[in-house]
Length: 231
Image (cartoon, rainbow, N blue to C red; front, side, top):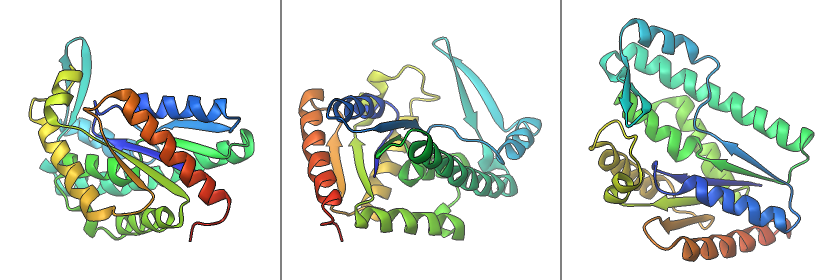
């Protein structure tokens, strides 16, 4: 069983993911937590090319180094980045699955970010390419939504305002960043995800209130899944 915590930076994903992990562990469930911010195997090639072409900028913001990728300035590099990052996601997912099932004997994996919608939105932002038209990405989206419908995945989407993100985060590459990302998240989640196994939480609201809703939702879905009620 996979639980995906999704949302823009500053929405409270990691806090929620850690709280869910702690709760499930206290209930005797074997849980593996996976932070899915960064995965690179084949992607080192476009990273190197982007550095040579000076399409990658390192900004120092409030003692934090922020990486800004401007791959949209080179379309061939944009497509190479999308393809390699997508393949790297598949590799990373398989590796985390191997670790969870064989090494840790885990029954639940919690993903802090995932390919849909998080990495999908990162790629759109970095390349300005409509990744929904790329066959490999379309296949991954179909796979995710199919498993979401079957109950193998639970998606918790942290919806938050740009103003809240600006208040919480001091390491953003620009002031326009949260406005663009929040718009992309809201648009794509509305377009792609309208499933019974999706919970939308408002990150601006009380943490305790959101946590109670999340635990109740997850309890219901896990119980239903393991009883074989999911279709």
